[in-house]
Length: 518
Ligand code: RAM
Image 1 (tube, protein in one colour):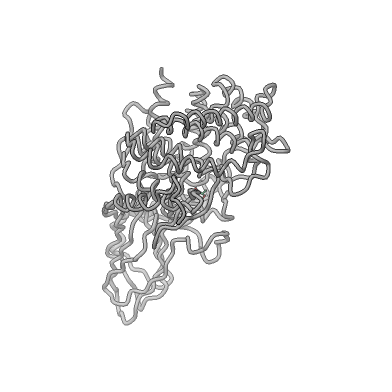
Image 2 (spheres, helix red, strand yellow):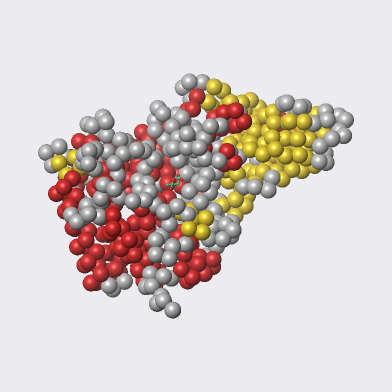
């Protein structure tokens, strides 16, 4: 029999995660208005919704073959759809409908049969063809959708049909959004609530990344969700359950997956080098919020194991190798990842050292601390150009924003140096900029670390604020102002418009506002 490894607490994690399964809350949401998409160049994705009539007028309208309508729920929710149909005139056949749940106006307006050209499955699109056999009758779709808009097309019907009632039974672990802090200005309050609605809609059986896509638990997203949760819903049970599921799905080497599938049973998903290193900081955040030392002690060895596995990615100088193996996510863009990953590894080691100290493991804490300093020193010595105030990544000495941001967050530079670096990279037009709210969050944190509070506030308004101005009531997976159809999946229809990793303004705004006004 092989000895049990010290990091292996998978069955304990799974049992505890199962015990923490949340009871979901349900509530009814009815449409606000009948709307019509309008194609216009100044709207985001060239499409906006215009009100046509109040939703109550729908039940008096007759729809025949080929006719359709779209309703706006007034709020983005996650839930199940029910329709009540009434026949008008002679009725001797089933009624066939195409129903499309959409997060964005552009999605509701699209013809999914002809317009879709994404590289992920077309089945992510939330459209169904259903037959209602008996009229009058109800049609309750069995699946869960993430939606703001609902499009109904009558494909076939004997004569005409009316829609008596439309209801979405919304579901999530929480229902009501905690209010925005009173002192925040109006624009920031809107951003705050949009962030919390994003988080709320992702709070399902586990912390999902996006309730439309991938409907999955990802470690990188979880870490940011946990931060916004700590200052709002405070559902630490759901954070703990999610972290435990990731731990329980580690492979036989102790590698924590980047994501897990939880149905029909727990499975290890993609391996993501950077996310695995974020296991320690996510655990540290949780334990510092709940004071649960027992959890820290149980999971510390697994957090440390991620660094044992990571060491093979370093060269003799202690620098991430150019040919580092595996999927290093960092952001959805093409740039050299060496220094971003190096900075992230230092960030993680510092967190691991604090965790070890918390667990009373002082010798280990010192070792992690030493390793952090060694990696930080290697980065400074071999990749920092002090005269240019820039960190240069990879064999071609590339400059990217992520390559500056992660070393700053790793504490490789003093706040003054960090300030110079962030101002210098802004003068580099060719440096790859952040593409996702995930990376923008890290930029926001880097500004704060460098004491650039004004820049952080401007970013909040220019980035998350811009999504609100474009009509968002949940924040998006991908957003680059001016690049409306950008998608990592070759079609913006596949982008998720309610995405966990974009909910972090709620975690920082209160503090940031105080710092600005100090
Ligand atoms: C996509 C999703 C997810 C993210 C991974 C890396 O599949 O956007 O949220 O964490 O990429």
